[in-house]
Structures are given as C-alpha cells and as structure tokens.
Length: 488
Ligand code: HEC
Ligand SMILES: [Cu+2]
Image (cartoon, rainbow, N blue to C red; front, side, top):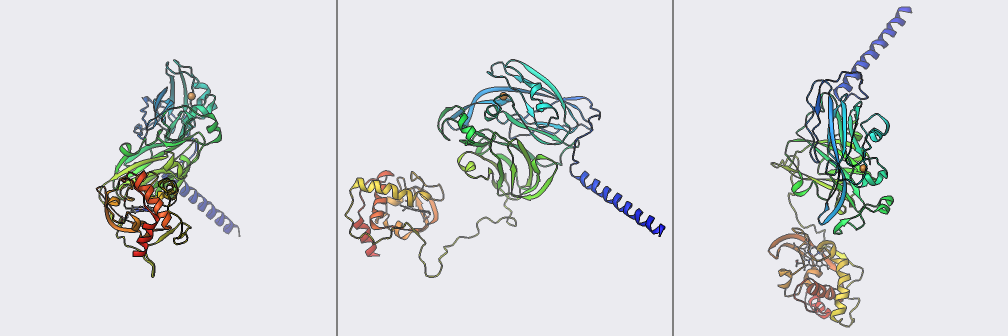
C-alpha cells in the first residue's frame, strides 16, 4: 500500500518533470517569450544603423548585449504623396515611414532625438518597445533646434511601432510620424534570404485622391476616419513598379509589417503567396499557413514565405478598395525560371458554349423589337442617349473614356478596326466578338459577349462612339441596325 503510493507519486513527479523539460526545449527552439533579466551585463557600444523602407538594417553581430546608440532626426518637409500631389510630411529621418531601428533583447538603447532647427514644431517619440512612462514621450519632448536624450532597456523581443506623441497626437501621426523598431532575440531571428520593411498608413487631404498640387491636412476627414489615401511606405507606388522589392525564385522573404494608422486596421495579404509563418502581432506566437493577417493601427506583424515561382507579388490591404483606389499596394518582383509543378500558368482557353446557346448575352432590360416604331433621333439626341447607354453597357470593359485595358479590352478611341468594318460595328454589339483581332497595332484575343439592345439603343451607342471617341463622326440610324438584323 505504502510503496505503491510512493511509486505512483514518483511516477507523476517524473512525468511532470519530463513534460516540463519537453515544454522548455520546445519553446526554446522558437523564441522564448517574456522580458529579459535587466541585471545581465551590457558590454561595449555600437552606433545603430538606420534604414529607409523597404530596407532593413543588418542585425547586430555581437555575442553579448551591448549599448546601442540611436540618432534620429525629425525633419518637416514637402514630398510626393502621389504623382502631381505634394504634402508637408513630418518625418523621423526625412522619409515616411521613419527609419527602421534594429536592436536585440537585453540591449541598452541610448536614444537621441534631434529636432531640426528649420522645423516649426516641438516633437517627441513614443516607442512601443519601451517599458516606461509614455514609451519615452515625456523624456524626449524637444523644441526645434534642440536634442533630447533618454535610455531604455529592450526587455521584450518583438516588432514595435514608434510614433510621435506630441499634441495633437493624431495630427502628428497623420502627417507621417511613425516607424518600426525590431527587438530580436540576442542570437537573432532565423536567417532568411531577404528582409523588407513595409508600413501602411493613411493620409487625410483637403482634395480628393489624385487631386493635383500641394494638399493640406483635413482634420474633419481624420475625425470621420475617411482617408483619401491609404498607402504602403508613405506614398502611392513608393514600393511598386520601378521601386518594387526584388527577389529570386527559391529565396525566402521576411516582411516586417507595421501600421501607423492613424485610424485604419490593415488586412494584410500578398496576392499569389501564402504566409508559411506569421509572428502574430509582431510577438512570439507563431501561426502557420496564413492567407491574410491583421495589422492593427499602432501594431505590427512579421510574415515569412518562400518564393517558388516567378512573377509579381502584390502586397495589399485586402479591404480592397484601399489597394486599388487609394494606394495601399506594394510589389515584390520574383525573377527566375517557371516551376510548372507548382503553377502552370494558363494551359488552355476555349470557348465555353453550353448546349443550345450562342455567345452569352448581357441583358440590359430593354429587349430589341419592343420599339419598332420609334422615330429616328437627331445627332444630339443620339449623343445624349449614347453616353448613358455606353456607361451602362460598355464602360465596365472598355473603360470610361474608351481607352480599354491594354492587352485585355481593346480601345474604342480612334479604332482602325472599328472604322474598317462595313457594318459600322453593329454586328459586334449584336453578335459579340471573339478570336484574335488587331486594334491600332496591338493584338487582342478575348471574348466580347453579345449585348442585348434595341435597334435604337445600338444606333445611339455607336453614334456616341463615332463622335466622342474620335472615330470620324457620323450618325448611325436605327433603320441601319434593323436592316442588319433582317439580313442575318
Ligand atoms: C465584358 C466585356 C465587354 C463589354 C461589356 C463590351 N465589350 Fe466590346 N469588346 C470586348 C472584348 C474582349 C473585345 C475584343 C474581342 C476579341 O478579342 O476578339 C471587344 C471588342 C469590341 C470592338 C472591336 C474592337 C475595337 O476596339 O474597336 C468594339 C467596337 C466593341 N467591342 C464595342 C463595344 C460596345 C459598343 C460595347 C457596349 C455596347 C461593348 N463593346 C461592350 C469586351 C467587351
Ligand atoms: Cu511630432
């Protein structure tokens, strides 16, 4: 009785010790969580390397904790927000987002905030990586032409936002005062081929998106949380097109994501990739196999993936109007050879015609034949009716000024293809069009569905296109459309 009790107690003890050891070794292999012992020795000092987005400083290579000296300068200046649009940005280091700072858990950070003498306003900095009042805000408040210094111990690892916290706080952030500071484990995060810095934020401007000239900050729009611009790395297209991030097939990528806000939460997604790993909210919890991750205002996330196939990856806020209409888009260009085991590209395209159907028809409500006896309209009447009908039936593909979309939808502006048609284009609208064609020197091979419109409506749309889209003018009559129908 007694021995068996002792034996079972021992067994329980051994099991629990064993599982504790197992638990310890598991959590060690990823990132150990929680604050570091601040009594640990700090040896030597280094001057922090600071970088502008999308670049990230190299990690500090030193066995022990060290004193890291950070010099950050606040600069107020006019810069590009979008093509033809300028804005007076308030910056940490001359760009938006602010300089990327990289230290290690346990390092002692000696922070110097310099306020450039040409600036108009006092500023400060609240680093979310600081354990202390205001994240350093009170200690760092500094007037133009002055410098402030304070020190903190980087107790917790993680990716942290920093921002200005001078009143009115919202306005200082809205004007561009935010950035990221990475506190990585002493031994560093696991190696990857590329690390990039991408930070989302919004701008509230007096003029609408794209309105040219210098734009003032609009307080009411900021209060209403209705930004005109939602951007990645401080401006529309800042890290896209020629400025896209560049990697090669087979390489691994780690993105340090931040959201400066001031208001919106980002649903961060990379079109054409899956995150193998997400350091949730920039902390030590790791999630895997994720499509979209939240980056809160004033928060962060770290995502990692491997680029298996070539192409352009689009980094977006999947609140998708922000991406395609307000600027929240960045790009990574992946160069290298195709890998058809992972992705084939389009293998084949053929017309899909269910039994008994002709080319698909788009219905516009009013059917043909219902207005046999309408009198012919004048040119002005046709142009007015044609504009509305064009917008309802054609604009979705051929775009609002008839310019089309290169490679997909042909232009209707000064179209040699249209002008060469004996039927004036009537057959295209009534029967649809498919197969390879050439318009103004460019090839198209796509499908235009037949559009169900009355004779009168077809006449108005074509008249509109001939006159407003530079196709030589003229008047198309309903009777011509009727004749075409009778012939077919
Ligand atoms: C669903 C998208 C779509 C809609 C809606 C559409 N088109 Fe098209 N259209 C196309 C495509 C695609 C082609 C090229 C087809 C091909 O490659 O053979 C085309 C070709 C044409 C062409 C000949 C090429 C050129 O550029 O001159 C004309 C003219 C034309 N469309 C007029 C119209 C008009 C007028 C309407 C509205 C009544 C309309 N389309 C609605 C997709 C569309
Ligand atoms: Cu400020």
